Image 1 (cartoon, rainbow, N blue to C red):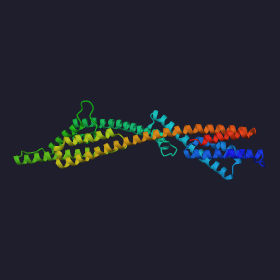
Image 2: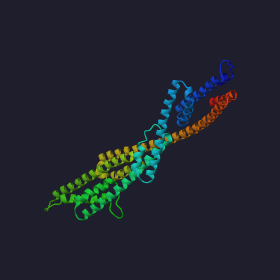
Image 3: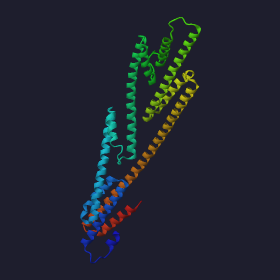
Image 4: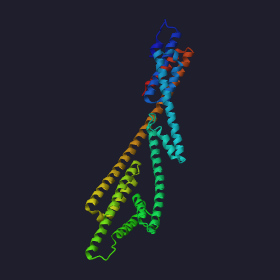
Length: 365
C-alpha cells in the first residue's frame, strides 16, 4: 500500500500531504499491531505499541483515538493485575520460607482465581498450597501425638490406681487415634482388653456359693459382655479409619490414608471371632471400598500432575513464541523509526523502501 502511495505522481498532492498520509499510515499500523498483540496476550508489547500510536494521535480519526485509549486502559489494568500477582507470589514464598504458613496460604488464596495467572504460575501456586497443607497437617499431627501421649500417660496412672473406668475412657481415645505407645509401654488396645476383662469379672463375680447351673450362666454373661465390648471397639476403630481417610485424602496424603485403612483392617482381622461372620464381612467390605477409593484418588492425582506438566510445557512454548514475536516487533519498530526519521528529512523515497521492508517482515510468518 505504501508503494502505490509514494510512487504515484500525485501532481496535485504536496509534500506536506504525502507526509501526513504516510505518518497516518504509520500510526494506524501501530494501533493495528497493538490490537493483535492484545488479542494474543502480549500485553507489555501491546502497551509499547500503544505509546507509539499515541505519538501520532492527532493523525488518527476520533474512532481510532477512542480505540487507542480504550485499549490502553484495559492493558494498564491487566499489567497492574499481573504485577500484583507477582508481588503476592514473591511475598507468599518469603512467608513460606520463614515458616509463616497460614499467612502464606492466605496470600496465595487472594490470587488463585486471578485471570492473569499463567499455567506455570498456577502450577507453582498449587504446589505451594499442597506443600503448605502438608506441613500444616504435619504440625497438627505432632500436636495430636503430644496430646494423645499425655492422655496415654494419664490413663496408665488411672489404671495403676485402680480407676478402671477413667483409664478405659483414655485408652479408647488413644486406640481410636491409631497412635502407638512409646518405649516399652503396652498398646492401648491391650490395656482395653485387660480393663474390659476386669470390668466384666467385677460385674459377674458371685457373692455366694453358686451351683453348676448358676456358674454356667455367669460364664455366658462374661463371654457375651466381652464380645459386645470388643464389637463396639472395632466399630469405633472402623469409623475412625473412615474419618481419618477422608481427612488424609482431602490433603493429598495418600500413603497415610492407606495406612489408616490397613491399621483398621488389622484390628478387624484380630477380632474376627468376636465379631462373627456378618460383622466381619460388613466391616471388611467397608474397608475394601475405602482402600479402592484411596487408590483411585491417588491415580487421579497422578493424572493431574501429568496435566500440570503438559500445561507447563505448553506455557514454555507460548513464552518462546512470545519472545520471537517480541523480537519481530522490535525490528518492525526499529524500521518504523528509521522511516519516520527519513520522512522528517524529506527523504520519502528512502522512507518508502524502509516501509516496504517493514511490511514484508510484518507479513512473514
